[in-house]
Image 1: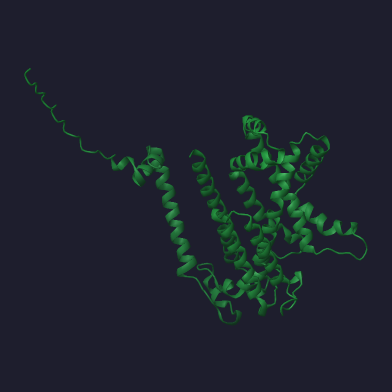
Image 2 (image 1 turned 180 degrees about the vertical axis):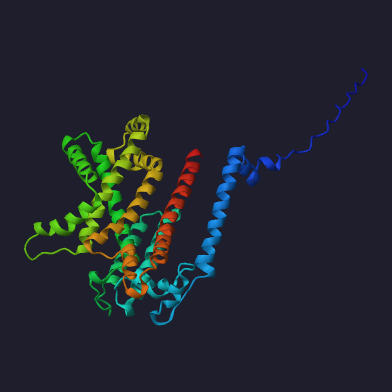
Length: 376
């Protein structure tokens, strides 16, 4: 038998890898697709860019180049001589302690300052998923207890400071943190109660939600401050800050309950049936299967509600509690600093923006991470 030789197939030249055109990807591609996709979009983009650049230049000249940063002994004539050409940041230099700490004793300002740092540290630790364990609850309890000891004092050699002297940013953080920390579990229970098959529990939850959502927060604060003490036994009095805190908790709980209920209703019915098929109890089904998925669905509206209530704490001014915004408004009542409210409101607004933006950015990252984990 003769040998048969098979010729090797001819080599095909490999095509060089092609990269997409620069004008279609990256920043240039995004600009072309979103801002310069047509002559109308291009014209609008250029007009808006002109106004933004002009405003930015004017703000830099007003807020930095021509600004006055400090004045000696409250002599604000240097600021008034500017006649609006430059900012008077000297009001912040002079009044920043009052804005942050209210009328808290000057020599004890380190205590509310430390409390603010503890709040921020608590938020950061709670945002890290590796700390999402049972021990985190003890961290919260311990940190909040330390904050209470620092603010009130009266122990460990710390002078006692009554609540009437508290104010500023620390009050805003106290109202927002305690309010949302207690309102969220209340909202979950109410949302589950509204879906209960027991008529009494369902009716009670519906009545609570509709009653609270039917009145503004201001009216609840008035009732907590003025009417609630009338129902207490003679000689018994509850702190004004605590009454406002309870009103905020009840108000936030009603709104959050509707957000959570929306997540429960959006969950496919098959999830409930699958949990029942596994023979899980009601609380096992709710805690391990239903709630985790429902809360994941409503992360954006939950955080939107959190941000709204963080800003709504400024309404406590109507019952005489000096939160961050009220402290800022009070700081410019002094005749020497009247007329420089823009600088104060910009500073207060920047503080609110930092906290609200942090919550919004964290919610976006958390939602992205949870969705990625679910796809895996």
